[in-house]
Amino acid sequence: MSFSIERYKQESKKLDTTGIDWQAVTASPLSKGDLFCLHYMMDIENHVPLYLSHLLVTRACMDPILTAFLACWNYEELWHGENLAKLLNLYGIEFDAQDRIANVRANLGFQNSVSILSTMVGSWLLKDFSAVYLTIGAINELSTLTGYAALIRKSGHPVLKDLLSRIIKDERRHYAFYFNSAKEWLAGNEKAQRVDRWMLNRFWVPVGQGVKTQEQVDALALYLFDDEQGEQDLLTLDEKIGKLPGLAGIELMSKALYVARERRRQNPEWAWRLIDNEEWAVAPPKKSPVGELTTRRMNVEAELSVLEGT
Ligand SMILES: [Fe+2]
Ligand SMILES: [Fe+2]
Image (cartoon, rainbow, N blue to C red):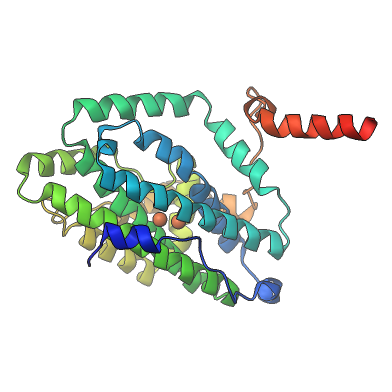
């Protein structure tokens, strides 16, 4: 698996959706589980700019190759979120994509600022921060594309398959960058390998956790991977990450599935109730009105009403 940053900079572009048969979105059904996963995935794709804000304050961003990658990566991820929202809207689920993004962010509240600060401080204290961050990037991209492949398989929806297959191609390039960069950092650096393994075993969480609750993460994991093929996909994923120097035999995504199963064993309603009750709407937070956080949108509306009144 090779990756050239110069080639990536030249070729990076907005997701090409030419020829996707959007008109046929309603011709095939999507299950409640498919819809739950699509909302989750859309929210996490749309969370990338905030995730980026955490990275840009770290010492990893002293590296111009990394910042060049992030500049292109952020733009590509934007179009993943936009197109997932488009598909859901065309399927008949009514929401304003921009309002939903604002609500997801507003719900993070103060926790987001604390997280930025702790990542910044951690990165400057920890010399091998980049190794950890790059490995997590590789796991996130690989689990995202594995999740999309599982959703294609579960849903059997032709238009969704077409869209997700195109997104998967982008995610593969992202994975190649993170994996190769992590490998470079870790090769021959035993201290970095020890730090990486220790941090992953203690602090790693599946992609989306933090923006989503533990139960939402489990609902996604159990819907997509709680069968023979799904479990095998996660074991293969761990094996691939285990090929990084110092990470042989590491268990991350497969372990996440096993603990999700255990939580459901203790409470049979766990996770599935979110899917069954169609709990995918995002309400604005009570204490932090979104209007205050997105004043530009409010001002545009106010200006329009003034113009209409004159
Ligand atoms: Fe993406
Ligand atoms: Fe990605």
